[in-house]
Image (tube, rainbow, N blue to C red; front, side, top):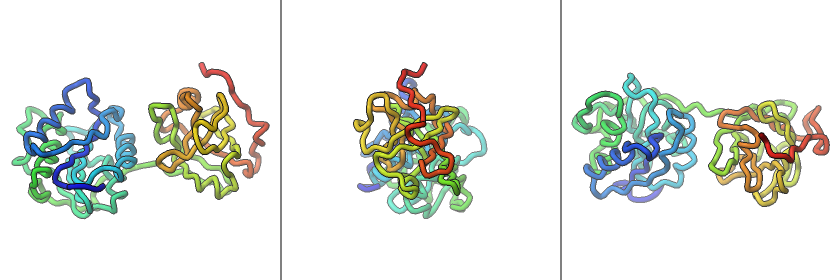
Length: 291
């Protein structure tokens, strides 16, 4: 995060753009802080998908301007879950305390102070408790952008009481097998895994080498390549994506659709050095279109 902390609000939500929710939240911030500039990270997080929102935010956070982050994926709206403002070194993250903010807070070096948004002076009168994004969190972001001190927004709470973000880690077997899962599928159908390239190099797998890949109940061969264009027609490949993780891909086709893979789908990567692994020539290659 870099920039003028008084003028930027980076906004992520699962509100979509069909309804008025995003526009209303932005209007509230502009009304409170006319000078504010809003960066729309995305509003197409799947509804209620806290983990997906947390992953989207943590992928983005290092590229956002310093200032305020407003992140709203809030399936617990109206319950006793807290709305919070988390102070970090170069700004403040505002959102529900449901794990959505936690990975990004950790990425930014940890929380300095945390405040529950309890001061109604900095909220809108609410006809119900079902739109805290409009009534509580967007006003808090606007007031912070207008120069209100974070401690004015409510009661300070213990940073250790925050709900953690639960992001899956791969399991590395003693035999060389790596059990992971799909973290994210982008709009091109590339399936990002929670597996680091170093895990392959540690198993003497390099660019151009093929591994055995189990996606759900499917068995495939996947060659590790440098770019999508290095894939042969209909060849499943592994690439190191722009966030430094391994992704399953097809050149100009959706690997996720071909493999029926979605976030959370289990994926096992088995290098040739793993006892019992098939050799690259034994692994079946499906060149047809999946139905």
